[in-house]
Amino acid sequence: QVQLVESGGGLVQAGGSLRLSCAASGGTFSSIGMGWFRQAPGKEREFVATISSRAFSTYYGDFVKGRFTISRDNAKNTVYLQMYGLKPEDTATYYCAARRGPSASSNQREYNYWGQGTQVTVSS
Image (cartoon, rainbow, N blue to C red; front, side):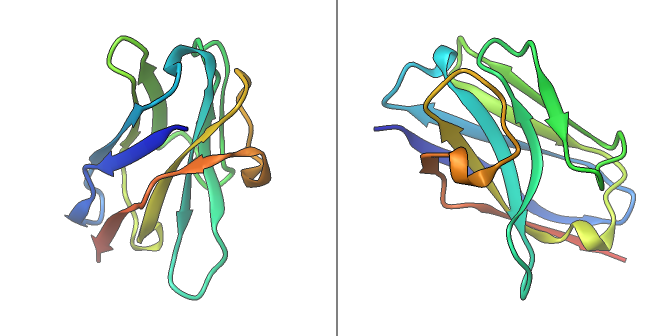
């Protein structure tokens, strides 16, 4: 069983930046793929970014367009999402997720464990 705890959300002005963190426990972090997803009010949850277990592969949602970077520190059992150039439409609850298996994946159905989420609000 893997437990995930996100942090780093908050209120930021448009054009600003935030770094989200997700601390994992209860599993072998270095052997699992990780992802970030987000859900805005009234919308479906969508894929943001994913990283493979050893960080050899990363993929991003189309809307990211180079503004976000996913990374991980396996020594600290933590995955990060660095966000730059934030826009009001990035406002959402951001969720960290872990899957059984080392590969990166944009398919949220392939994720087995989810954090509680951290709120990101971008003001215009």
